[in-house]
Length: 285
Length: 266
Image (cartoon, rainbow over all chains, first blue to last red; front, side):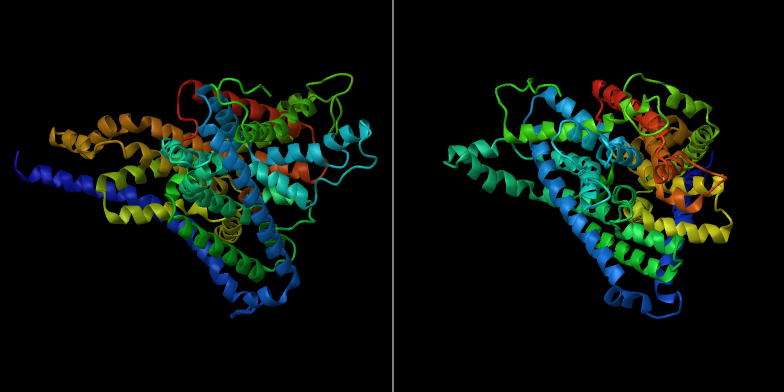
């Protein structure tokens, strides 16, 4: 056999690997990136070229209300999820193996249940003739049903329920990585339990908190299913607003502008997130 | 909820209390679908005098539900095959070449999980109208394949990161050509990662709602679309029956993975 043969087959192999790597990218570039870029372009070309769509941010009351609702609900959800999620992650790290297994099992399982099934369950529980109101009225605690859903309360309950596992799992990974000799060391040096927590444990868990917070915020801003069902048309977040512009009022320019703003906000958050944690790790389900 | 009792000498602390309350908050509201699914009535209610399995029956006998289950399976399997093939090819190619370009391209492949679904939903709606792919199986399969692709790339690349590239070089220097080295040396080692990626891709497709609402209508009606329509007008207890089946399957799967000692939170 001549010396040429192996190198020839090596370069053939090389070519195969390049093909394997580039073919999926071409597929995505053509069928994903181009359509999304087209939407971004439409925000400055439809109905006519210019920045008229972006001027709506300053002039259109409905647009401003929607963005404000989105930011407000996103912030409330993120705050609540971080507070609860941190406590859960803390308990997970400090619990025995069996308790941890059960708690983690519940968190992971709820992670996989679809948003639609969850929304259905919440509607059944919270609507005016739902299970919670019926039970409260049967026991005579209330005379008329409480409005628990088709308002901001219902949306926040549903979103916290959906987002909690997204915060608990990265927080748990982060807290587990903190050296468990540090807090006892602080105690030995004279810190009270709360001082040791505030000055030692909490600062070390800050990257995890920021990371989890950004992930929850990213998903909350673009959330569609839960706010649309539990908001019942009264609480409209930006994703549902965009959808209405397309399917009902046919204002493609306005929808494209809001999609661009939403995408810009999410990309900014992702870039910021990449400073605190491995984004790929965070996105893994 | 069972009493937290297995932790040695730690007592009931505030975080543990919150953790169990949070677990109850995550779990109990979901379980409400179980009694609802057993109601003998045609409307959303709890069974009072008797229970009935009629809503489970309608999942397998009502033509609209069976069509949706079938459509979800067709689209899910098609998208899984495509996403798994493309995702594995990319991960292996990038791993073997190890060029800096690979890392950048990987970010491109992650785009479908970073971009908010509503943004690509309207993008696909527009583009698929131009391409004539609206309301077709192929159209939805292509989209779901792109949405599943990132998960396959992440899981397969995760397994490959622990695999020594010299193994493949060794096989090649012993006379295997690229294809043989791939199928006899690399592939057997990453099978578990590929399988996990395929499961992720299938579940992604099975659950996908927003894009399906935009790009399909009559010809293709996947389960999420059918449930969405059911929630919009008269709420059908069959949704609770379906939800019960899905929740039970999820818990069985998670329990098996946990008991096997697998990393359920991976």
